[in-house]
Length: 308
Ligand SMILES: O=C(O)CCC(=O)C(=O)O
Ligand SMILES: [Fe+2]
Image: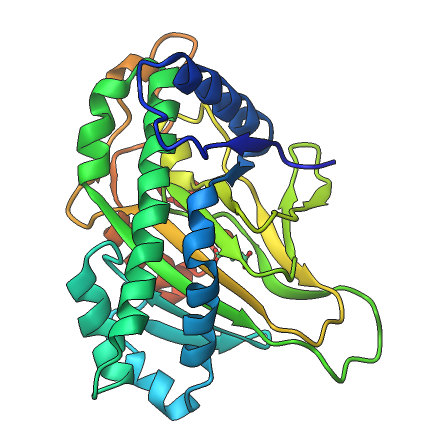
C-alpha cells in the first residue's frame, strides 16, 4: 500500500482552471482515504542541496550553542529538544525573513550567516506557497472557499528542523521507534526529507504504511485543527517514525501551518446541519498548546480538548 502521489509541478496551477479542479478532486480523495499524500513539486529541488547543507551545519554546532535557542514559551518558538536519538528545532513565523534571522541565525552565529537564513526562508516560501494552494482546494471541495483568505491570513507557519542520528552501533536490523505515534494538532503539515525514509502513517483500518517520498516531493498531512474546522469531515492521520539500522542521519524539514494565537478557530455554519451536528467548540490554538504542555494533560489531543 502506498499513499497517493499528486502532481503540483505546473506553476500555472490556478483556481478556476480545469487542471486545478482535477488536482482538487485528487486531494480530496487522498485526504479522505489516508489524511496524507505525496505532493510532487519540482521547485523544491532548487533548495534541496542548500537545505540539507544548512541543516547539517546547524546540527553540527556544539550542543551548548544549539541550546541557546531555547525559548521561555514551550512549543511556541525556537526550542531544541533531544530525545529518541534525535534533535529538533522549531521556529515561529518562518515565512517572515526577520523571524528566522532574529530567532535562529543571529543566536547561533552572532557574526551572521545570511546563506543559512536565505536557505530556510526560500524553503518556507516554497512550502507555504504550496500549502496555501492545497488548503484552498480543500475548502473549495466543501464549498466554503469564502473562508480561505481569513484562514490563511491567520496562519503562523512554524518550521521544524529534525535530525535523526544514524545508528552505527546497532546490533539488530529491527526497525526502531524514533518518533512516537501522534496526530499533528495544526492545520496542515508539509514534510521534506532526505533520502532516509522512516515516516509511517496509520490507515483507518489500523495498518501502518511506510511513506517513501521521491526527492521532488513533500509529504502532506492534515492536522487536527483542519479536521476540527471541517466538523470532522476529513481525518487527520496518526503517524510515527520507525527507522531501520542506517548509518546515515535522517534529516526532515517540516512546515506546520498553525492558527495564530488570538484567532478563534470556529466551524463554519455551512458545515453544520441535521446529518452533521456541531462536533467541536471554537478554540484558540495557542491556548490549546498551553493546556497540552501543562503537566496534567500531556497526552490530550486537540479533539479531546474541544469536543462538545
Ligand atoms: O520526521 C518525520 O517524518 C515526521 C515528523 C513529525 O511527525 C512531526 O514533527 O510532527
Ligand atoms: Fe507529526
